[in-house]
Length: 117
Image 1: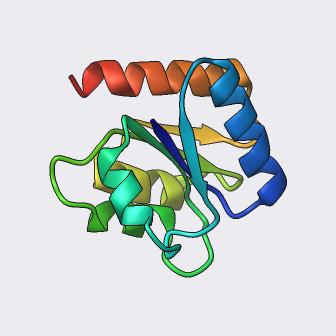
Image 2 (image 1 turned 135 degrees about the horizontal axis):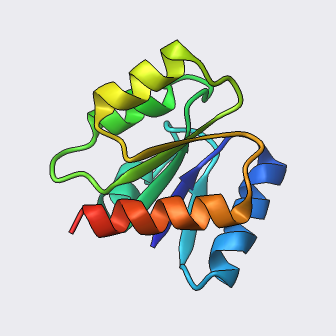
């Protein structure tokens, strides 16, 4: 299962469709503070998380998860030193800058899950 945390409803639905078409089961959330997110995140094969979320940010959410944490692929519309630093400090596996291709996301998930084994 791939857990998606993205506040933009249109992008969230597009990511769900892409990943389901690619053979993954998905569960999506609009915020890192949604009900049951920690339960699903702890069971996930990989997390796809927006860096800039309302309330708790993507990196802050990832930091709250107990070890062993599933691998994470972060997404941001604002690439730069700050988002990269936040992502790297969490130990996440990839950072994709929006807009990105579906192929890039599927490859990032594949690389993240392979390196987490």
